[in-house]
Figure 1 (cartoon, rainbow, N blue to C red):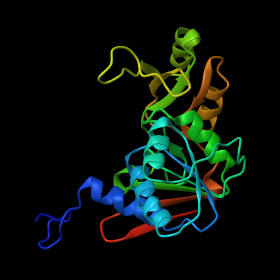
Figure 2 (cartoon, one colour; figure 1 turned 90 degrees about the vertical axis):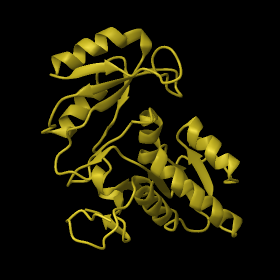
Figure 3 (cartoon, rainbow, N blue to C red; figure 1 turned 45 degrees about the vertical axis):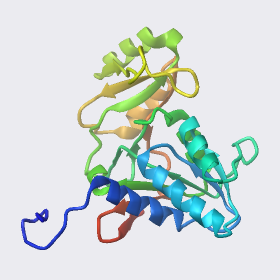
Figure 4 (cartoon, rainbow, N blue to C red; figure 1 turned 30 degrees about the vertical axis):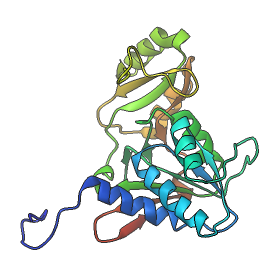
Length: 239
């Protein structure tokens, strides 16, 4: 066994173990009677699994999924489901993130559900973000997903280039052509290098004609709790 610090006797945790740890921890934060936003991605999948176990033990909740993937997983495991039209105000939302900075601003959208995730985050009284340690960094610098109308693809690419970004159309795996979101749109992965002012960039991208939303989540930090799986229990980050 080789620990991170090189000393003997410390077992390095596999990424899935850290995700499971964070997901299970978040599922235990759910209380009876809550309506819960269910995010998309591998870490949230563990939270859904543990929440389903609690439902079988008697927990009464309703889940509002942010994607077909989350809906199918939750339904198959017996979690009662609803929509934002049924419950426009949610008690809690559990979701993942691609990056989290020191101010709890996020980059999200690797699962191509960023628009619905942003709607659910806005509706939730509390946002719980589940990640492993690798996702927590000092400054955001990852690719920013942007959901774009196919009709406006080329103008949006040119607009992103004018902001200094490099926009790449996300292509499908096990299908020909681009990824198509649950809303019927395309996703651009946009690299800007180190993002000095995430709020400003989020605003500029969101106002661009043809853009549905972008993967910068800067407005929810005050109601965000980040649950970080670290192999020997979880730590919580809040403002």
